[in-house]
Length: 217
Image (cartoon, rainbow, N blue to C red; front, top):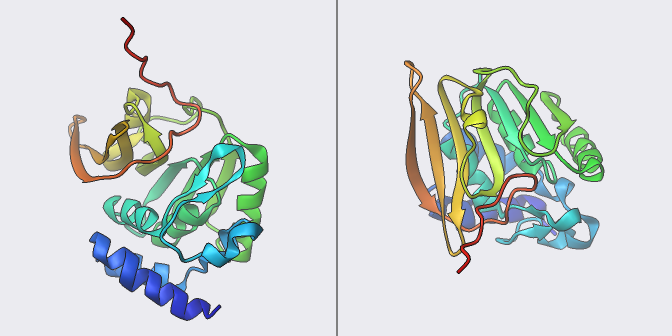
């Protein structure tokens, strides 16, 4: 496989048409070797427009979804980022290349170990990985400029929004199948949080977060 050509086609044919136009994001996508983050059985699909199955029923996001999440976080080089759901580490690497530091939480130890190896191979040194299931309860409030959830949730817990600094942004896919919406939550300087739906997408549930109870007759 010509990986440089495959990355070019991924950016031009999958990602740009999905309204990912930020120069910094596109530049990092053009250099980041996605094949380093793939399970061996799926290496040939590294630049395909598809989700990739991981251990424990988790998935690696399609490239366009990872790119759009990163873009819509509106990252700055000085930002401190929290990622919930490390998975393969590919989005972790993209976030780290666009920010100062990333703390990424993953509930499965084996996935975390694999992601650590992938990030080392990609030369990413400003991402810290930690095993954690569900809501992080040991992080100080107002300590992150940006937060991203890599799977869908029925609703965003207030405890996560409390981790945002003034001006901080949180990206999450919220809702129930078949209708889910990528939503950006922004904490204003006076403390209020405003939400904005930015696009529609359906993602698997994020492990460790409460589900909306099903209606019963």
